[in-house]
Image 1 (cartoon, helix red, strand yellow):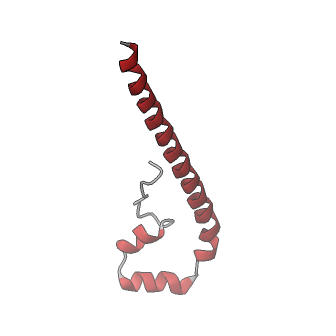
Image 2 (image 1 turned 60 degrees about the horizontal axis):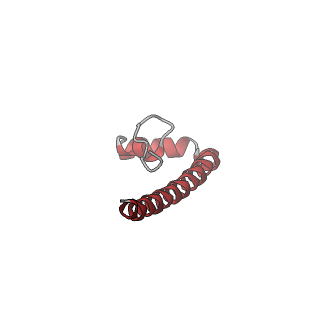
Length: 79
């Protein structure tokens, strides 16, 4: 779920919103006011959190693989 993109075309989402807009609507929206600076910090915080969660998930997966491998090595020896 950490990697899954948000595709809701609400006004707060950039790329999904632009995908359903016409070029004229995009030009009008950008001409009125540039909202990118206001969105940059929250999106970068979200990105950093997502990357930290991906690192955590990769580490957990590695530990799980090592644990299953160790269990598979111990079980035949126990018989």
